[in-house]
Length: 261
Image 1: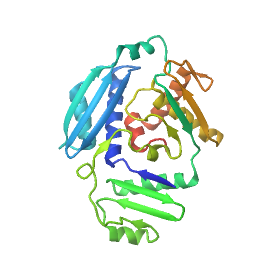
Image 2 (image 1 turned 60 degrees about the horizontal axis):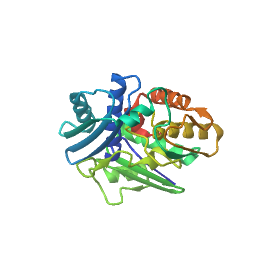
Image 3 (image 1 turned 45 degrees about the vertical axis):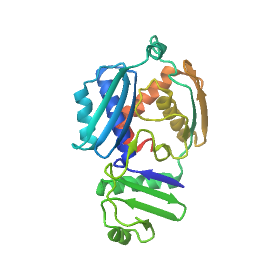
């Protein structure tokens, strides 16, 4: 059983904004330290940013408007990252947080639903969520004729409450609230989005997920803030693996669109 939401779901809009802000930090510095939380809905967006990189507030506002809409009124809080946390990474990358992580190989059901969600989003780029549970297939797609959708997918449960508009005018969004959609059966004690690569919540999650796909079996890891090795590997190697993965998908904002699969 799996749920997948598309990039226009309000929670994913929040993730994408957080990712775009992290991209701005990496454009300003090679290895910035940054953590971003975004809450939005009903034409308001609050972004709280702790960062070592200097990011122009105008650029942040432009990213919010581009992703969430020109009507969005942004409340932006920018603070320097705690100096003790920054010192932790001064000489070399070390684990930036405590955490537990479980990477799980994807099932065929999960791969199928992910492909369907992308296909649907290419035609209907509006708030949508989809569930596949064995024989039961549920499609909730906003800004679309439910009657027409039922003709296309006669074996699916389509918009059980009828047509709906969705988006941030109907619902609120928050960073890292759709980790089930982003990670399938994988488990984390933190969140994937709005953080730099020194954070275990990003890099160790990516490492555990990729390793689980390679081995086709579960991978369970834990780490403590300041660790210089994780899973028997120097922490800088974990960070570099994640850096290459993020680069391969087009950056943190693009990563936030669909998560790990």
